[in-house]
Image (cartoon, rainbow, N blue to C red; front, side, top):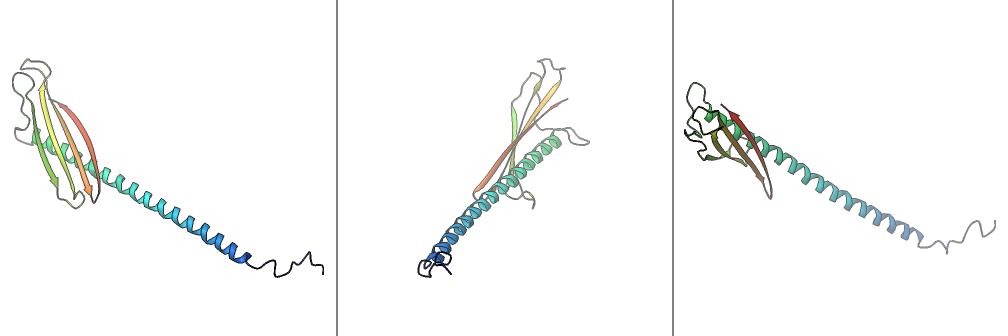
Length: 150
């Protein structure tokens, strides 16, 4: 056996420590990057869920505004229109206590007017609802608007 094929054991001393240290460092960096990725992914999902809940809170505000404008079997008294054009606006703020929208609220505003200043002109209502949800340090807000012509 020639010494070139099988190097002496003295030349190989310490190489296992270098390889082990290299593997530990690489694995540590891999674990750290995966941990950061999971944290970022978790925050993104939280924002998406909170944004969806804020949208539904704003939608709830619009639906409540429509019920106030056009109640079944009665005359609405919300956001009245005067005989001479634009009348200003009404506003409501409500918090939602249901389990699905806990921590959410909406702010509803209504403006009304007539297509022209003629008292027989078409009446319109513009409802705007801003839904907001907060969970811990994360908050989200969505705005939806609808225009109804009568």
